[in-house]
Length: 284
Length: 279
Image 1 (cartoon, one colour):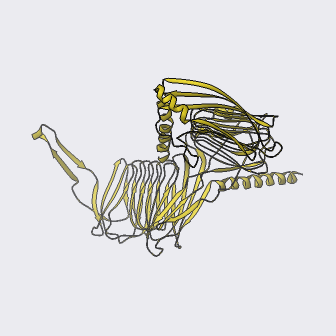
Image 2 (cartoon, chains in turn yellow, purple):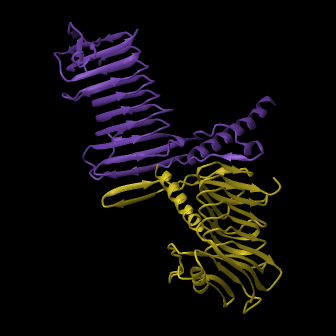
Image 3 (tube, chains in turn cyan, blue):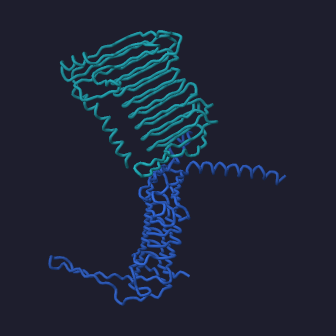
């Protein structure tokens, strides 16, 4: 029953920004274009995109710098609010020690980098498209009104969304992808060699692998099926957690279903509350 | 040659059984629960929506809880379209077992509404139980001394070598209870709708009994029951308020065993009632 409340809470959270858009009649947009160079073109590279409203698209290319194309859309209740949005919200672009950082900054940004969105009279959305070197670590974040798409990139990744889906195509590497309202779909060009974690609350979680897959999976869905193209063997249940709080003993079993594909290997964690979990095989 | 051919088959069977056992292991969850006060009786509370509960008293100081899912998710019996497209659907064998203990009260919770789960529990003999089931399972208790409350809907209740008092109620299923001793002053109740009631009591038990089998069921007793002559008549007169005058007669058998004592109720709608004297 407590899960039911969680679903309602998440749905309510998702509905808030959608409501606030309706009264924002003033709109202005501009396009932006930047090229950012790395200080050490042959060394390991990292690209961080920290967005709040809007999409992020990242495409790996045979290039040594980062090429950013984007569209900024400002929506506000009045002309004054629009001018205030222009003053308050900006895109910070920087490079330091081979780490390109693109960050949407504004009064909603807390000192620790997290976002506190109280009811403002404007919304500034950035739809950002980046071409990045094919070997590149990624840190991507957005919150509202935007899907995240990554294609043909090799490296570690940490991808976070809240109200939108995450799609990763022809990926080499490992990492985690997490959203709340939207599906997560990750397709590997080469099977991951290190642990991965893919999760959402409302939506399917799908990962695609090559036929020669060897990995251990930890899987959990509350409302949905777990489907696999691969033969699996079920792993023994992992130990649950026990604690004693103010004299009360509490044991909670591990809720994940463990399965092994091939000979086992890195741990791939896939989790959703409302949706299916799909382990897909290329050419199957 | 014939015998030689059988060996690989035997090996294959042994191998498959091994695999089966392994997959069973993944569906089992087990936890040993220490009690706050191991010398004192405990209270155990467990309820399931799908599955059965078995509780056995043993010579130990801890409660051992094992949950086993039957590997099938409720409401997913149909073939999914993805399965038809060649994908395999994996079972989630997690029971979602949660066990808490506070002041010798042990509570057991599962996600049995989502996956049929059986609970296999071992408790110190001195224990009171509150067990509830709904579908796909029976309640089985053996060698427990205390107050036992067992409630089922679509399943039976079987209590053997119990001592103390029992409240047992189900809808579709029989009730069987064998007492080694009864609490001297506790009322008891055995109620089902469709099923027999079979209760074995110590020879010297003292009780006032109320026995009722509504449809064609028979009542058997090893005990000499001093049957009271008249059945209980309830008169409801609402004529002054423009209502009805209603007489209802409870056609239960009222009587006493060994001079009478606390009230024991035995009631079924479709089924026989047997009162046995322990030998």
